Image (cartoon, rainbow, N blue to C red; front, side, top):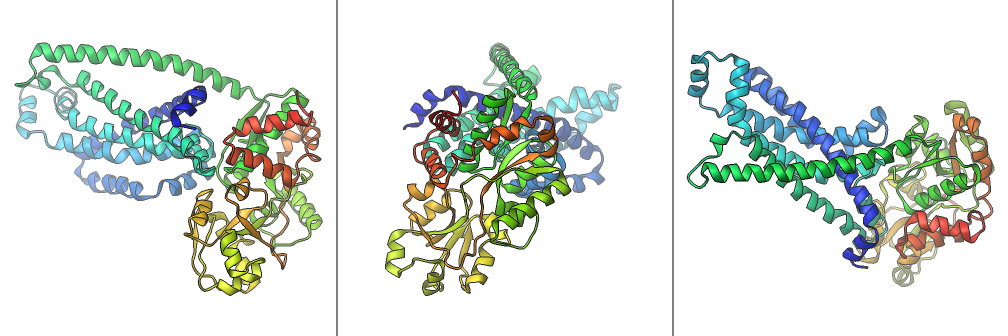
Length: 524
């Protein structure tokens, strides 16, 4: 499917994401201007503040954006607030520096003349300095705005929306069309933002400052009139789009229950399955917060009450979240995790579903055949010549790669961290020879990956379990009954097929979930 065809078929979804991106970027840049310009003025008049402010802005700019986002999540939760705050931080440096530079380069004689005619410091700043420095200040604002458009794609990592949803979805499913469907509008938006801010600069720069040998008064006046018309039209369109967005937000706020998901296909499909069955059986209004990032992001959102429900896995909850020692006894693991969640956080861990999305080690069939690899223990034959790629979460879990290597007595040093579907691409391309996978991952079938037998039973069971806030369970006990109806239908084979339809068939997860429930007679 071409990008143009995809945009034609999904233009309403793309336009909604585009507006979310504009909304988030506009808020972030506007707040950055309100903070950055006064700071630039301050360090112009208070030279002692110059080094601390500029060095602080430089330091914040040097922090990786995802790391800064990770710092913000514990304090501000998920959604738009942390995404906007991160972009504000990254937008400040050009605005502060250009404001200072524009004011500092003004001829001292100009200030002296202004004082000579009796202007106060505030009047000099407002009527003389800022108009003269405006082109330099606007250059900083334009740089920040264009950078913010690209950076705001990280908003999708924590469920804040925007065009990053398409980019992340494309990366997750190895779908170049989706990546381009998100990236191309973002690029066009950046160009449009730069153009519109150029028009704002034309209108705000004093008429006299725009006159030169190439532009007489009439030409400048016509240019300003045209800029005013374009900006007025843009403002009208923005108000219309903003009204539509406000209506959608009000609908979301009226939701009875908020269902979240992690950032991979199966969890997203499961979120839609749970949402659809809840709406069909209870009549409750569900707000879906899809693609919230990794386990910790979704879990913290549940604990803080930002979501009411999401799907996790027994091994992940017991070992990774509750910090227990690994065990392969499913009943003991489930009982202990359920009791600890209830006692510590008032979270109800509901009955497990039938699919076990445990970790596996995957290799390409040709490599497995060439080196006679059938089990994880067989990796000893190639341990000094093999290279692996695993998710960052798998690298840092107690039941992850380090524990597996020690348990099996393997000495594999060359292991890189690659999240999501790119590790499958690296495996298929021969850049690595093994990866970690989930047993029900649709990409296993897409890339024809062979799973090695966990012959010493290292990996614990990872049966899927709905995680529900205790307060929500008390208020809406019917939700528990609705979710229990899914249990007989969600098997390993079913989930792998549903994942495959998303990853390879390029079908929307919401449609895949709805179609399956209809085929089972669970919804109309």
